[in-house]
Amino acid sequence: MKEKYKSYLYWAGTLALAGVLLVLALRGVDWKQTLVALAGSRIDLLLFACLILNISYFARGLRWRVLLSADQPIAPLVVYGATMVGYLGNDFLPARAGEIMRTVLLAHRTGLSRIFILGTILTERIIDTVAVLALGSGAILALPVLNEFMPSGLSNAIRLTSLVVILMVSVLLLTGQAQSLFRRVLARWPLSDELSHRIVDAFENFERGLQSFRHPGRALNLVALTLAIWLLDSTAGVVVARSLGLSVTIIEALFFMTALALSSALPSTPGYVGIYQFVAVTLLPVFGLSPSDALAYLIAFQATAYVVVIIWGLWGMWRLSAPAPVEAQPDEVV
Image 1: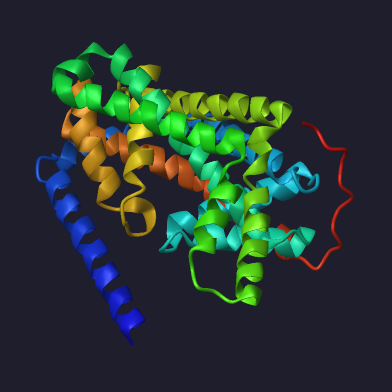
Image 2: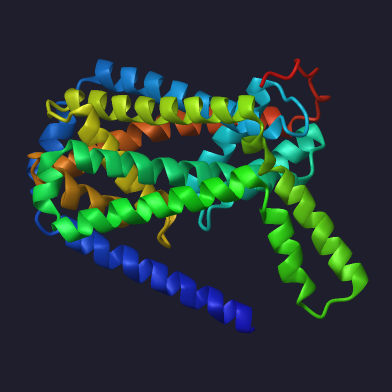
């Protein structure tokens, strides 16, 4: 009963936050201007943005495959299907259910440990967090208008925090101290030998998902693919803006993408309703867009991404749920 109460409280708070941010985001919007901008969008450029985002999602699948290869090589299309199932679930279901969906389906298809798969997903999230902090801080330096918009103390604090987080995470991933630290903490708890053994065994499976970064070849692939992913996402953002007749540079698009990524860490409804709209109408006017155009830009970008996610997410569910035998695995590439 207590857990049920906590769940109700969590969702009440989430809906209240989304509602407040949505009201704040929409209060200065001229809906007629937003609808005119959307109606005049160029379909050919939106389709081109779909293609770019599709390549970006495939690159995300390849990056995840690098992490999974710490256990066994997996066919790229299998990992891509699971990746898109994850995004489908995250976009349309609450509580980031997509992570559980892709874990279960990939484990069913390949026989990998679910805990190991979750470990690779956590590593993915850590990599993206470091990338967001690093690229976001770089964008602040590259865009003078942001330094004018934000107090100097705040921008310096963001850069310092980003540097500390990047260094801490890098040390943890590269030195392999996670397991020894976990064992020392666990030893202080009054647990039975059997329970301790089960916990350690589960953590070792989980920690294997973090080990790919300690392999030089895999680490280089992870860094290269991460940079490619964010460059592709930013390019798609520029193309979507062009389709609406708006001017957004690739650095501005990159900063906007990193801001959306950071905001997605907040408790949110499916589709990040309220949070994304607030970020768009708060940040994009700094680059010269009106709140109405900023909202149109966000709607067009999300719609473009949803087209890709829905098509390939449903394909991934069909492919991974089929009772077909596991495909022959290719040679490992590191």
